[in-house]
Image (cartoon, rainbow, N blue to C red; front, side, top):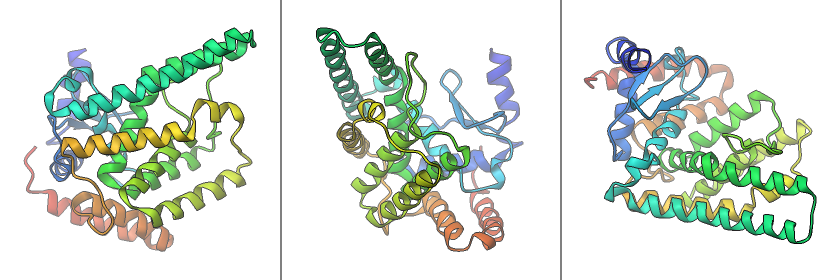
Length: 304
């Protein structure tokens, strides 16, 4: 394991792939990241992910050439905040408290639904589905929502645009819900919902309206619509409460928030990238090339 994960990541990071390592270091400085900065290794075969044991952030090999999905770096930086050992740190107590309360609320709500179904002798299928919802919320969904909100809090609209763009490219049903087995990630629509709640809490109303319109239009064009099971699985009031609690917790921890007209550093660049993409799609490639070259120059002073 050490050779395959730890040593391999060290060999394929820093000196060989300095741009994303330097960029991640700058992001952490920008947002006052409270934990050890992870090593970046551009060896992921498919997607962004982070290794808890070795504190390695894996990125696909070509991501250093593009800007639009680098917001996923922020999502992955949110995961260590929620690692069990890190939640024991006094500095992260506000996150620990809100996170635990959010999970407890979901457990209580779904257990009540399961008991009610049993009392009414409802279909076994309903109870099994609710149990799958419960297992998913506790083991992974809440963590993914909090990482989405961490990225939203620290980066702003660029993360919402990135999530929207990725979901629409995948062309899968954004309202998928588990039947009888737990899943690792919430539905794309529920994630979009909680991200938009976070943006609204941060004051990005205009951007929320723009993203909501494009998202809704594309969902409609795809022929998708939300059903009752999805609404039961991801109640809107619960998602809004999770967003408010997470935003407050991150602020109380001392993380620097993205706010309208107050974007700076890497967050400013990534938000400008999405603005440029939507304002001039045809000319975006040239803009992106210049922006990356500028970033590389600015970040060249970082020693990794």
